[in-house]
Length: 202
Figure 1 (cartoon, rainbow, N blue to C red):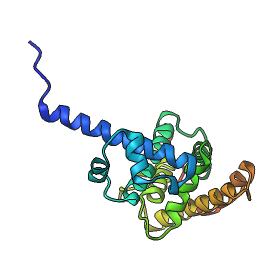
Figure 2: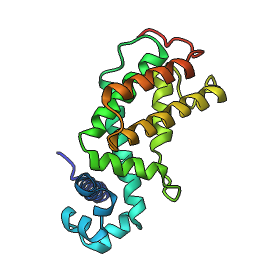
Figure 3: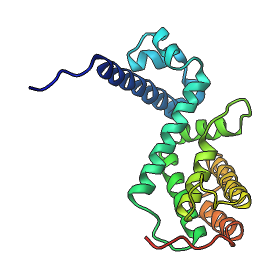
């Protein structure tokens, strides 16, 4: 005889689905009009939840921005996990990941602009840059939390992430093409990751 789902499990799934709808609604609004379009009342209406419910999940608009940022990184990480970079050098693998992220983000320029602005505005603390840096370390053959990763390697990978963010911002402003961004990242990655050991073969 099949047991009935536990009430707490059903409630947890319902809460997860509700949170997911809220984040998707916020991302959809940001893709249309940037951060300014992510008005809490509008997000609640689009997600089909009461405004009070929205505030229980996300006490402020910036908490909502952080959640949208995290979702975008989840997509990038999922893409890399499904299809790891085919190149063999740390710099080549890093550029592959960053250009893949660039193409993904630029499909929704307004959302990309919102994410980049969330990075450069000091009052918004998002995990975006840290997670991208961790991803670069992983594809170059290092686990970000492992003791084998030196402080210098973390700093260099973080510097490459910073260059990418500024190149992405320049692209959003119409000052860069895809080819220019890729070339600039190739030059920077080749220098910054020159002393990184080659990643192990899969």
